[in-house]
Length: 486
Image 1: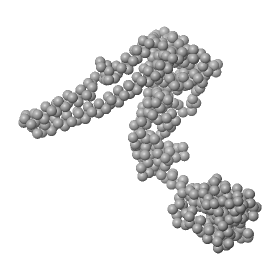
Image 2: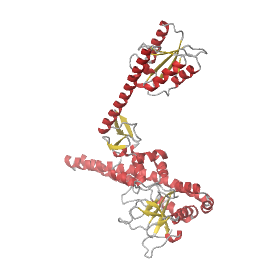
Image 3: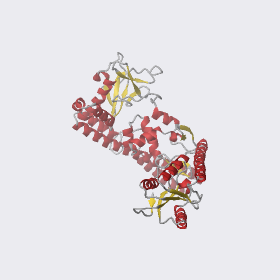
Image 4: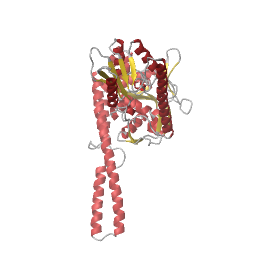
């Protein structure tokens, strides 16, 4: 809202409005309206004009700062004449126009519509006013219907009609995957591995709420949304149906999230589905696998024992120096940065492979220059070596990313170990209230995985820790399978 000047006693006010779509229309600009209204005031000897504007605002309601200021001035008796270029500048709603006309009449204010030459002092003028208001409302509703039909048609054609989601750019009306698409894929990959939203936030750099939004949106499956209904789109999907299902496995429609401390963090070790909370009505709370009886034989487990396992895992990580050193060696052994470290897989490091291939290429060139190989043979062997070198370079990039991830994991482990070492977890747990316990679980426990004969506890930044059922008061099966103690 803008105004040109304001005095203690104003008699004539010119009100001007344009919506965004009308900005470029000839005759509807703010400046054009102001010029015409000033000329009208001078012609009818209405005195100096104060201009109030609402640029870029719709006339579908009265919630406009400039209009509200005009009404406040009318209320205190500072206005005798209100000038508008057309009635729909005041409002496109018939009810609002009638309300404004009554308010102006009660306050002794004359309303002048310049282009429509209205005089509301006569019955004919008031009737014409209502007719014009009806048309203003009709055109507004017609515009709304046209926009709605246009959106529906665009959605049927697979066009995304909203703002682009993270991972996409909107280019000439089409969603195009951008550089954030890789991080979006990482969100789904980590969620499929049962990482918490908080852990995904730390690993991807997306904030917590954005991670939640990404994992819930089917736009990444190549679908478009309209009126809460997803339909096939024509843009490229960032994740596959398999990746989407893996990130959402164990989440059943109609199941309300539980308030239990470990809710959404308990995983069935047999079928990799999330286990859900069940109650017997007597205060006993257990976790059971959704696939129980449908191919999974995992027995239900008490939430008390699972929570004790989580607390035990945090305590061990903070107090057992031998365990800490074992974890450090395990993390170091997975990295090529540490001499003598056991590499994952059987392939030699990419740097060694590249060196070998470069030597072979040099020998091939010398052999060619010495006439020891035909042109066709040289080309064939050269193509093989170029392809192998390119593959080795890609392997080198993968190794660097892997080493960086391991480095980050080592740093995260040291941070968590230091925190737990300085925190007497047993004492804290006994004195903490439910919300404090919940914060500790959500910040430090990624998951508790349940097997028939043991549990695995994953503390953020550390490999999983094995916990025997008997250590946390859970029933030990008569036939014990694999699984060692902590």
